[in-house]
Amino acid sequence: MRLAQLSERSGITTATVKYYLREGLLPPGRRVTATQSEYDESHLRRLRLIRAMTQVGRLPVTTVREVLAVVDDGSQDQHSRIGAAVWALPHGNEPTADDPAVAAAEHTVQMLLDRVGWSFGRLAGPDSPAYRKLVGAVAELHRLGYPCNVENLLPYAAAASRLAEADLDLVESYDDAEEQIEAAVACTVLYEPVLLGLRRLAEAEECNRRFGTGS
Amino acid sequence: MRLAQLSERSGITTATVKYYLREGLLPPGRRVTATQSEYDESHLRRLRLIRAMTQVGRLPVTTVREVLAVVDDGSQDQHSRIGAAVWALPHGNEPTADDPAVAAAEHTVQMLLDRVGWSFGRLAGPDSPAYRKLVGAVAELHRLGYPCNVENLLPYAAAASRLAEADLDLVESYDDAEEQIEAAVACTVLYEPVLLGLRRLAEAEECNRRFGTGS
Image 1: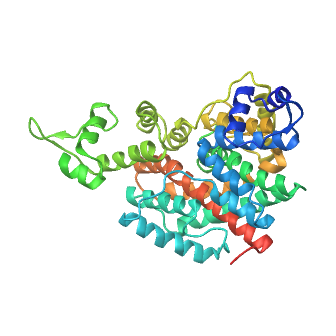
Image 2 (image 1 turned 45 degrees about the horizontal axis):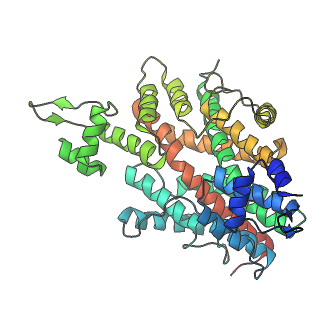
């Protein structure tokens, strides 16, 4: 397909598509004339992935480029690439290291991970953005004096485990290796607001169920 | 305690505390002299709640005021107030109504809710911010062509249900009625990054477990 059709099918303006091409987020098409290139389904998929990260994940273009570099890194085996791409997704501000609440939070998180037996292999660990984000969030709960010990966190870890199984099932439902990695990144980002919305609705439902304040 | 001690114990500067007093987010203290007021534990709790919403939830002050108005509304019974306060928490941008992807997403969400049997009583429903946010997130998945049917959503709804039970257990662990409502709002916001961080770590763990790319 030509640029105009790529724009139409992706719902992204030609100006923005050209910008992504210039910035190297979208690989160039196959040149057919001096002024025209041919694009294929892989370009369409890449545009959808870029849009998931920029529009829903609100990531800056420089960060999107870093994540895509991992997605495109052919030097790692397929499944390492899925894990590495999700790892590379940034996740809010990192906590400052010299904060005593952060040290206490790191202890809590490590006790939790020991308890649930997560080891990650080389796919995550204390340096990963997700781990730092979790430590920062637990530190904030400690700092504000709301309960957040290992017992409070266990139901969250159990829920996250079950969701990860569903997420990886979804990723593996794609046959193509490239599509699997793209789906891992896109669905990690796109299902976040789904999860947060459902949690709030479930709280309303549980409130209604427990206290019968309903209709 | 005096303003200086309130600032010290909350970790919020006196200038910011005065700003919250001026804006009506923090109720005035008990006047003891012409220039000094006395504050108590309820002021400290309120400051922590404001901080949860502004720093972690990134809500603007006008929105914080709206949520606090629900928290402070004594005309409703206790448990309605918990549900209403969580309902009042905003949740990102609302989807536009005339988008065909939104209509399809509403259908998917309604099928999901029928399937899991959530009715909410009068605590939530198609007008609540959480419901609108969920519809918007599902519409974005549809629009970008990633899978998001009822079967994909069921594990998310199941996880949300279990978390809501844990959340309400935590809320009910507070004896005081005011503290329960404040904890419901604060923990709804503060546990969101915990949940998202744990989901990413669980994805790395599941990737490692399933494909053995580890260590």
